[in-house]
Image (cartoon, rainbow, N blue to C red; front, side, top):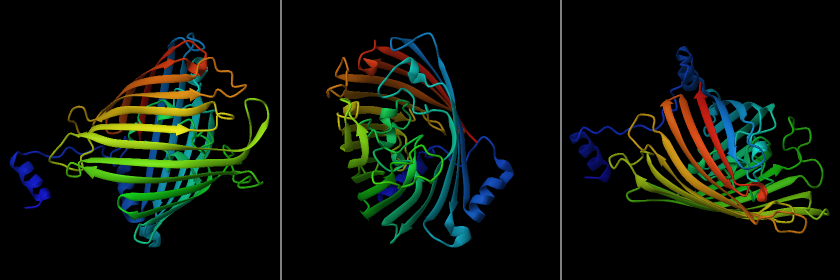
Length: 395
């Protein structure tokens, strides 16, 4: 008897049904059955979400008198090229975004920021790309306007934290990511199930531009990044893990803290993740459990306020059994500040601690209270305590 047969038989005997992870097909609006028809017959899927964020600096930082409210509307449409065009492994994707509201970090003054939805207020086509798998899915190519952080330097199980440093190391400060995605060519190779190699070259001149007019123009417009990673799963495939490392460079002209101009900058990073506890022995693919992650990066302290960065944390998916599991997380991120001439930081580091609880009220509705304590925000401000509340609706 195989392990899987044993698990299925034992689950049946105990009348245990595996608890499904978030049902991606369940949304606030059913669209009268149109949505599954478009997906099944034409390969067309939609992923609209609306996020509302409120934050208040309770002490320290720049100012405690104000508060901040912002929203982000994100509408993504994906077209599987198989059903209509008979192109297996191909996907065309477009992502429309509208963001507006106050920047909560104006009251805090953190070098790392406090909320990954903060931006300058804009309506844009955030991403527009075509992706194709080749050679029995051993090669993947993505071309177009892309958020580089969806491909590189991202700890998967840190995505629920609000602090931007948990999305990617702030030592990679030229990274073309939200809200300034960029035109790019990305190539990933998967020679084995446990190994991958990726490379991306991004237009460094057009970040934040709403059109491709400036794409790859001029001699110093390229951000390049490469990553290699290994994956594994232990304890009968119930505890997956990943270790990845990458390097990046940008050949634009940067102004140093001392006032001169420097051609190019570069750095490196490491990301590690491991599931350390699996909730449901009878369902190996159940995602509920406890995950640990860590990240480290270093950059050029002559032009980057963050010369080194260290972050780590824990997230618990499904602390109690329910159809759409809640998440809880705790983590810290420490940005070691530049001590280059002219940088002017009073302290050598800024450290942030974050605690959140993501309550999945419905499959389409999540409520997330969040608390951050920031030591020496901006390198020279009083310690800050920031409370936030996020509401996300999936339509």
